[in-house]
Structure formats: structure tokens, C-alpha cells
Length: 235
Length: 334
Image 1 (cartoon, one colour):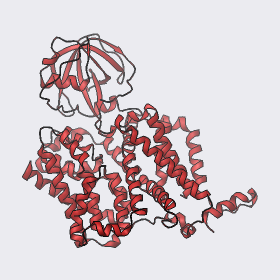
Image 2 (cartoon, rainbow over the protein chains, first blue to last red):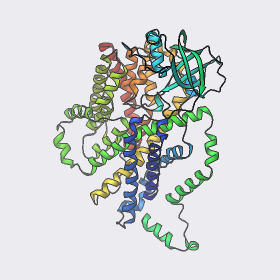
Image 3 (tube, rainbow over the protein chains, first blue to last red):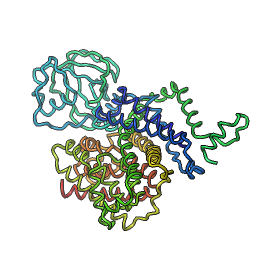
């Protein structure tokens, strides 16, 4: 791989990173907070490509290495074409129902006290917040309230639908599902992976996740409607 | 004839007179790109199975997460290579190598970042005359005991603050021990730093040449490592881990191996360890100490930056020392 080819690969790699961070594409893979650093590194990669070409074409005298330069130039650099291809042409989707079925639900950590729910009726609550309140507080702060959860449908081994969302702490590689079981209400007959907004009440039913034996909380469904996937699909 | 001149000759010559010289990299690259764009539809169709889709997502996300750290590490290592004079390191580090090792380990505390950035920096330090033992201690310490990683650990284990202390201490001990071990047993010719061309000439030219070379080189190995980590992520069923968790010795070994295979960034591994709650605290400590020091993408990058002979010896030794140190720390502190 000679230097011009390296410059082109660097340019494409930096460009792919920049494109992903200026659209919402990067949110499928990493947290929102990484964006400024992604933009900075994309700019640095493009700058390295431009400077390489600049020194190549400015007619600077090639150093003596170049006679056998291709022996030393890293051939492994060709692999950088793969992420460019993956980002620009494939743009794989955010993790979804496949991961939700394969991995066990997140082990929740106990919090000493939960703040009161938002005033709206129904109150919008994150899945992980709902599950923590349900399991560690036996739903005390949920009592008598209608809540609204947004997530995608995942089906367990027995085919019963659950509402799930992927929790990501750093990047999608550490993503784990949070699952909430569903009881009552109109039958959910949409395919796995469909995003739903569900309104319902706290129910005290519990189940164990077959994958890791963690507790799964349940929601008593009042109504559900399909929605578009949110911009930020992870919690 | 140099490559540049060669290309000019080819470009100037009429088509019929071109000598058969094989295909240049730029031509090959152009061909690959054109093929990719032409077959775009069919190729994205290939990536349609759910498992393969998950693989691609994990592969891309490991890379995207690592890119800022890689670029930051490469820029810093280029600054070290080009702008920091050799004499600086002689003054900054204690002269005796046995003392330089702990000093370099502690210096790792101030570099926030994950392991991808530390590899090119350590390579650059060795190039600039820092004793390899100290550079290697820095390589091991920097990703494991910096403030961001320790804060993440505290957040992930709110009920066990001793986890943070145990992680910091055990990682520091491993870094220092490995540095000293290198002083006793290491041979300099195991390290084969790749030839980095044109570090002479103007400083600007040298700086960008170092950046280009290191990103392409370390980045290529990062792609290999990310692919391996994504494969493990998709094929290891979680139910296997359940069975292993119940046995104390097996659980330590299982999480040590898992840390190597999963190759999670050191800033995120605490959250993953927290979620493996069926395992004992000690085995999760092993996961946190081994992960930032030995994992698939690191081994791949070390083989690229320091040479295969080095990585084959260094990675298993580090693995053994890290497991031991973490188990001792776990027994004493947790």
C-alpha cells in the first residue's frame, strides 16, 4: 500500500466518521457525548490525508526508503476499507430484538429513593426506571399512576411479547436489554422489533429471565400504538 | 527508480508502451471501491441475517468508540516522536531502570483514555530512547488506572467502593511487576518496531508522516481486533456463563478469558462487570484488571506495533500476572 493509497483510505475513513457524526447514524453505535470527539478525530484524519497528499505532490524529494518502500508500508492498512464500507454502504441498524432475546435483562441496581414521577398523565417513564421502581420499591412510587413506556417488541421462548430497550453504557458492544413483561390489554400482534408506545399501570406480577435468572417486572397494558423508532434508540 | 517517479513515468507514457509492473495500490484501491459501489445492493443484502447484522453493528461500534482514542493516542505519539527531544525523557524519568518502571506506571494515571491510544504512545516512547521496561509499564498502567476509568468503576459499583481501590492497586502492581519482569527476562530484540519512514526532513512533514503511518498501521490491527471481539460477542451464549459462575475457581478463569475475548474499552468494562452479577466480586475484579491489559484487539495492535514475537510472550505473561494480582487483591480487599 503506497502513500497515496493510504491517504485515500485515511480520507475515506475520516469522511465516514464525519458523515456518521453529522447525521444521527453515530447514535446507533456510541453515546451522544462522544460526538465532539468523533468530529475532531474525523477532521484530524482528513487533515492527515490532505497533508500526506500535499507533501507527496509538492515535489518534495522522496526519501531513500521509497526504493523499497512497499516492503515497509503496512499492508494491514487495507483493512480500514472495511469500516468505511460498513459505515457508508451498510450502516448496520441499532441493536434490537435479536440481542434482547439472546441476552439476559439488565441487573438493576438499588437506589435509595426514587424521585416522584413526572406530573403528566400518563407519565412518560424510561423502561429501566420503571423496572427499578417496580422491583426495588415494589412499585410504591408507581401506585395509582398511569405510565407510558416506549420500546420495541421482543418475544421470549414461549412467544409472549415483552417490551424491551437496549441499555448502553459506552458503545453498542456493551449493550444489554432491559425487558418489561406485558399483561392484559388488547393482544399485541405486531412482529418482533416493532416500536410501541404503551400506556398502562403497575402490576405486581414477576418473572425470571430464562437467560440469566434476573427479575423481570410487568406492566398491565391499557392500550398500545406503534410509533416510529426514536432518534436515540438506547437508554 | 522510486515509486513516485515510476508513477509519473507510467502516467506520461502512452498506453501501449506501459511496461508490465503489476498494479499499484491506488489502482487496486480504486478498483475495490468501484466494485463496492457497483455491488452495493447485493452486499447490503448479504448483511441481512439478524446474527450477521448484530455482528456488523458490534464491529462498527467497537471501532467508532475506539477512533477518538486511537487518533488522540496517535497525535500524542507523533508529538512525542517529533517535538519532544530525546534528552527530555532522560531528565524526566529516574536514571535507574528499576526506578523508572514505577515512575512510568504512576505517570499512566494522568492519561485519560482507553488502551487503543496507549499502544502507539508506548511505541513512540521506546523509539525516543525510553527504556522498554518503563514504556511497557506505562502501556499497562495508563488505560487501567486513569481517573475516568476509576470514576466509571465507582459509578458501576455504588455499593462496593473497595472495588475501585482494589482495581487501582492491583492494576498498578501488575504494571510495575511486568516492567521489572521485563528488566530481568526481556530481550530487546523481541521488540521489532515497524520501520517508520521519513522522520527526517521538516518537522511538519515528519509529524504528518508519523500520524499517517500510525493510524493506518494501528488502525488496521484495530479492525482485526474489533472483528474478533464482535465474533465473540455474537457467538458466546450467555447461558454458558451461568454454569461457570457457580464454581469459584472456574468463575475467575472464565471472567479472565471473557475479558480477553470481549475486548471492551476500559472505560466501559466496569458497567459490563457490574451486569455479570451472578459472578463473585473477586472474579469480576479479575475481569476489570485483565481487560485493559490483555485483550484481542490489544494483542492484535501490540503484534502490529511491537512485533509478533513480542506479543506472543508479553500477552500470556501479563495475563498470568494480572490474574494472580487480582485474585490476591480480591482476597485481601474485597
